[in-house]
Image 1 (spheres, one colour):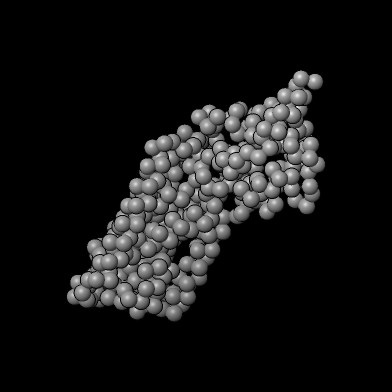
Image 2 (cartoon, rainbow, N blue to C red):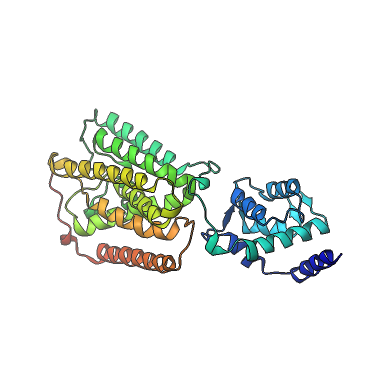
Length: 361
């Protein structure tokens, strides 16, 4: 009887807690989502199954995940604590016990300093990793179209310097070129290397961090690549997705640093990453200096894309265990990226035309 009265008092005192604060304690990486399996483990670790039977808990969590993406958003979480799961309403007693269990788990049993996640646990195919696949398909299709139109391709060419997609610093006012050059590749070695690297590295990132984060990083690298080339190497044409590829590679490095303790086989991952980077650097340097003048493309985009990938990777990728110093890195990375992009844009807008020499063909 005393225990029942104590439970009732606790339930009444927690009737209107700050549910956003409760949710934030489960949302370790502050991305607005809590993986469902991990959330279930938190509640089970609380050892409070006498409040909510295990089969009832499983049913509530399954129905709470309305969009069935394997994680709970704050909106789904709030509907659950309000007693609404799917199309059903929880009875007042079950709803009250569930709210008490959630609050206890968040504030008492699972302190932040002791929560850990395995990186592998975060892999999920729902939603599927669509961005890297779609981008790769478009790149292949346009490469085939260009090859047919130009009468064939070789290992290192040719490239249509009059293409409406390729980046030409003297035509920089055609703003779409800052992004569209990613769809033009110089020979089958160039596109094959880019496709292999971006799929090997990009797909695992999408499985953990979701497609939209990878898309932001990839496109940021593409933009940084064209802006950087326009400022530091304006005499060459720019073609290929290497800016985006390097952004993905360097973002994976940032991911390794942030989540080293949660990653299985982290040293092996680092070694594979370095091999991929080394291979792509070799191909880039070879293409820059060994080809014919008309096939001369810039590898400044690789460096600019890599810098963008590290900076934006620190900002948008999920961090499985947030340390205090990493918040400072987050703000510093965002500020550095915005300053660099703004500076490059200003140079491109303000520089006179004679700053950009005509490309030699």
